[in-house]
Image 1 (cartoon, rainbow, N blue to C red):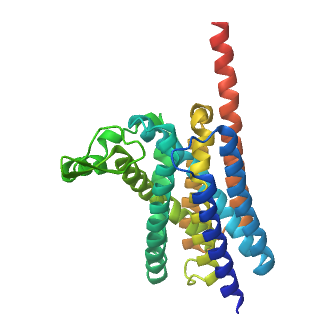
Image 2 (cartoon, rainbow, N blue to C red):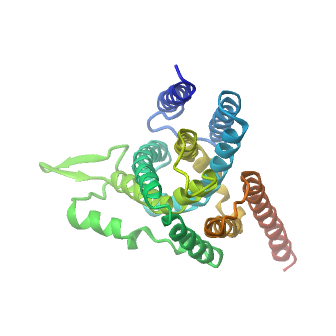
Image 3 (cartoon, helix red, strand yellow):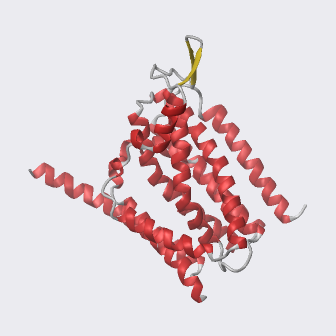
Length: 323
């Protein structure tokens, strides 16, 4: 077997094994997930991702492993921002604690399927028309600017989304207690429950976020926009996306009680998006930013935003106490 075949086989075996473990042991139906269990699951997914990076380091090259880890860290940080929107969705639909885990998992599996399709389309488009990366660059600059000055994630209202209105227009939706069911039969007619609506909205929201994350990861992985994607680059893009998405469920339960403790995280992510957008655009002038510099920028922005969020929370708590 070639090195590429071994790498893809290893990734496939790890992915299938991890999914079976998640479905069988870590995602039992109607089970509430405690903070402790969510922490263990988060460590499991992050550890698995780091282990795959180590595998790439020895099986491929240190550069491939560095690209993977940088792309994974970027996807993981974007996932944290997504989670705050997921929390609003689950709160809006009053999803029971025992139903949340399975609904999240189904939504995430759908998101993986859509990501695979979008990545394949994106890679084909960029290989054929390398200039499209410059359009992505401007798009990321615009997205980063909007995200930096966005006041509050609570501006997102599931009831006002187009997908929610479309579901209610073309499908029968029952507001009865789902009790773990996604479809119910009432008076001889089939109805979707709110759990089905939640899963569809989760998948659609992830598709919207993919418009930011996929160009970002592509820019991080690809060193020269005029050179076709290598098999290593394609592996890194797919694996970093999938591993980051699979860790979303446990991260959701870990962070749902701390949504307000990372108030400035979106500003850190926004700066990273602007940096990646600039990185894409200056490549037109044959200026290439090394992957290690990109990794350093991502780490510094995320750590700084988290530290500042904690500092701001302490100052606010102190001011409220003195008042």
